[in-house]
Image 1 (cartoon, rainbow, N blue to C red):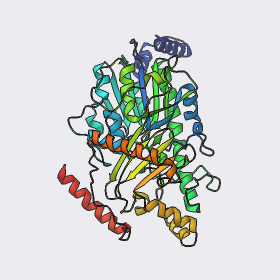
Image 2 (image 1 turned 45 degrees about the vertical axis):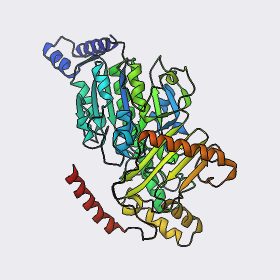
Image 3 (image 1 turned 180 degrees about the vertical axis):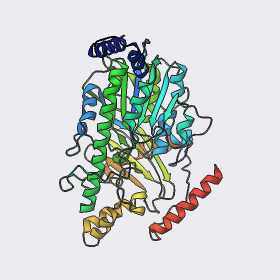
Image 4 (image 1 turned 60 degrees about the vertical axis):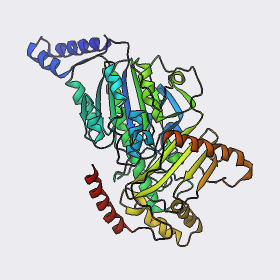
Length: 488
């Protein structure tokens, strides 16, 4: 009803402006200003995803330099989930876990650029079976999985998101509840060349090597975050007017940024993600929760609150009681996994995290931890690595940071309350021995239940050999892609 009144007022105002009833003009107006009518009690849903956005790099999470006014407003209008985690810190397995409610070993998408098994159900279909139309824009799933999601409409363009959303809804008459899924490619590399931040004043984590090139790239990363924020603001303002009050808005990121110890790692910089959920008059505005939730829990929650049919035998579960303020706790442990990303990052890791502690197991500790950034060193991505190596020649601390990046111990254990940046590995500390054994056993049991075999997609790089050079990696990557096509 609210949208109809707004539409009638808009028509009346234009007719007054022209001072006489022009039926031809009115016909054009009606054809170009279609309405969105939701007569159901089920809410419209907006799911807005960032790509490689670190949870610390947002204004409402106390970021000191980067500006995100629209994300900050969304946070003040809804609930911030302070302890949200992805299933795996790489695009394909993370998004597959979101859409299936299953952890990587169970859904089949364990390595990056892989996909769930064909027999696995996608939870979006539960909403469709309950009368929802799903309209998707940009990067929702990974690669070829997007068309397989069965969206009622899909625009795969990674740019012009605001224009594409507005153009589609302005020419489409929609009745009944809808779910709009929007996936921005930012701040995924390559980062923009239009740097709006002063490199000299950007902030760097204490475990980074402070060089001019690092600061320049950090500013470009922040610039992409601000660009993402601006687009999000424009789209959400438009959708608020079109969809009305009974709309649930959810914003998150698929994992941390492509920085050392972030993406492809099970430290919090890789697995912890921003999560905001807004639902006027349902979820308390300007609120937050410290309950721990996983990305596999998102769709089961949406399924419950919409009254859709549950999906049996999945790993995810609904945290609706947390959103409704009926519970302050949810998961006691968060399990995360990572296997590999093509030929660039072959380093299987598993972890279990509680609110106080984290236990990490590095299965191939006798091999290098590497990724695209340090191996390819592309402009707008990892070019700063050249300055890191130059700095390490004479700087002892820089040398230690690089060594810590490439070579990992068999196990890691962190006291998160006293060491939130996970810098002090306590695996050999006798004071924590009982807790370490307990979490070690928990991880073993969980992996057994998941039938997690730690599958490898490529041979890892032994620390007894030199780190592969860029030319060698590019050759291996070509061969890897060729073999991959044969297998599909």
